[in-house]
Length: 442
Image (cartoon, rainbow, N blue to C red; front, side, top):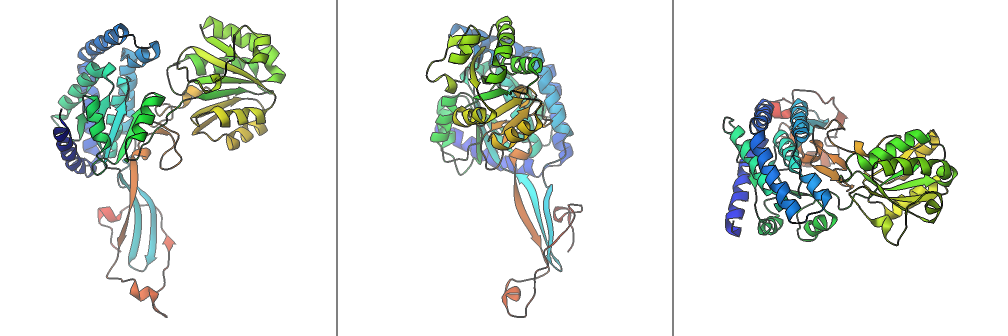
């Protein structure tokens, strides 16, 4: 598609997104239900398209991690349907009140949540990510521009065709949704800062950095997923073995799987043989520092290993002498994504919680819980390591911004600036209805 055509489509989508942003929650929920029914109805067609993508990816020599992310199985469909159901069940984010305050008699202020506007999502493989972002944008009233990787072209096309078919019976239509096709379309999108409000890239480190470096549009996401699990001196070692195994093997291609296992030297000789046995059974390739190599059979550490994001059945093991050393290692080599501690020492947990500067900080559980669906957000558009706007798994709240509404009866600022004039009351009110949007009087 040529540049002018893409620009026209995106600008038309922006106009149609305003209809979505002012729609009723019941209309959006009904459409979410229709989309779920449509995906079930069209699953065999979608699955056939996905199988073509898988074959093409394997034949072109794509890495195993990418091929795994590409699969849209019965299990992925089921998870997607549950996500749609959860998103529909969540309260309407549009118009929710964040602050409510009487500035003075007959002068009322409200801060309310509103859609960001138009969101561009660029993602590699992961067809289920398409369903997640569509559901969240629909519920939050945002227009969405999708650009999936060429590896999932057939699947994404089939998914969007199904969604658009489900939109035909709705007053909201489908003009709030656009699927782009080529890499040149992405370059066009990255330059449309007047028409696109937020970009969400999901993919490799190099891919996310490319997006960040080639646009002035705000970008939400993370470049790296170098996650750690620290086994403390006071850890329940059997618990630690199972948590570490799940954190690495449950879905190694995910950005919240661990890449480095930190082990306190006080328990290393007892813990590492148990862990190595478990990892070996799970066909996990282990890289270890000098102290780990003295205890278990592993590939000796090489310079740069601590910064590697394997996204596969491969892990680093580093023996440390203290909680403080573990935290320092995470700060130096981590990506501020998800890091966890295993310990029975509550003081150590509190220290880890407060000193590890990551979007998700866990104690005594798998890092794989860092997920919007598992957090009860319904779905997620991605995990953000940014500190401004949204951080961690990003659900509905992360796709909203706010605006202030003020309603008065003829007041002017000049009357508050003169000596002996009016004074502000600034009295906070309960966040209750009716609201100014619903015709509340002052």
